[in-house]
Amino acid sequence: MDFLRSFFHLDERKSSVKVELLAGLTTFLAMAYILPVNSSMLEKTGIPFGGIFFATAVSAAIASIVMGLFANYPVALAPGMGLNAFFTYTLVFNYGLSWQASLTAVLVAGVLFLIVSLTGLRRLVINAIPNALKYAVGAGIGFFITFIGLQNAGIIIGDPNTLVSLGDLEHPTVLLGIFGIVLVFILFALKIKFALIIAIIATAVLGLLLNAFGIDLMPSYSSESLPGLFSGVKATFGQAFTGFPELFRHPQVFGIIFTLLFVDFFDTSGTIMAVGTQANLIDENGELVDSDKALIADSVGTITGSIFGTSSVTSYIESATGIEQGARTGLTAVTVAVLFLLSLIIYPLLSVVNGVVVGVNNFGDPIIYSPVTAMALVLVGALMIRQLKDIDWDDPAYLIPAFLTIIMMVLTYSIATGIAVGFIFYPIAMIATKRYKEVNPVMYGLAIIFILSFIFGIV
Image (cartoon, one colour):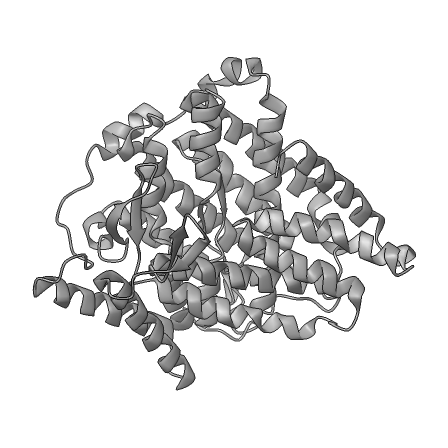
């Protein structure tokens, strides 16, 4: 225990081994859905399901270990949602790349990301961003993950006329999700310690009981083992090294690589800024402590994931659930890593928290509700918007880009797009208010890059 307290600076960051371990469990439960979801998504490209599942778990574990031991950040990583959809529907289905060549593109983007992190370019970018936009990014992510949480609970659903609408509140799975949300808010209001993990366990137990009494579409325990796990590994490991000729013959090769690098860089930067601020990992100069190391961990995860056979690995905003439980050090990330490795052994147990398939959408993809963990995203999202109080809303030069960052992040379902729009309008607003000299030159450069990225359809 003394070694852990010393290595992870637990006393310095006012935490404890118990708090970090429980926070790690909370974070893992909030993001465990990625194991079956990422596997199901990438399986459509022809990659064996077992190989993807193994790659998802192992890449998440390796990246989270590096994040915990090297950067000492309470941030967990795994293959990113959105990036896996880009891999499947754009690279393979639209551009016609094989999954091997698509993995090669992820590998190349990961290496470039590592170079960017090692050169300190990321620090230059982050330090050029005004605090108001950093707060807006954090709050925007709060709204964004609340939206995801409400979707996961089935409370918000897609609608062909209004894009989104209220879900079926009589649906049993939705009702269980509502129970979890109400419970976690009550526990939080009563200042019950570890409210999130208590709510997750209570909702899971209730779901299992209802399932036992014959209520349909409830969480259930499956004793089935993961099919083809290790045979799939043999088929996928190292395939990223075989796709170079095909990838670099493709006319869109540079756009593909830049898109993967661009989205991963700004998604991760936004997450690190938001989560780091929430965990009070700020030095006396107002900068994030060891943020460069956090980006290196992210790039290592992407490289590792591509070699094992999955899409880009990124920092998970679900880490905020653990931070709300008191996580302040890398011990939380290491705990998540260990749990991802254990998931290869205890896969059936995870069926309780992974979600419930309630139907299929118009594209034939399964509609999955996650009533056991949805409340975690809703609660943490509500807490993250507290950063809005630190923005000077009376200053139009900050109000306009901050508002656009938040609203576009939610409505476009993309952290990177929200950041791009806000960063474009920040220098525009500063020029309009005749304060253009106060803008860091890096922000002008980023605005131009983002404008070009929209023109060429990269964001």
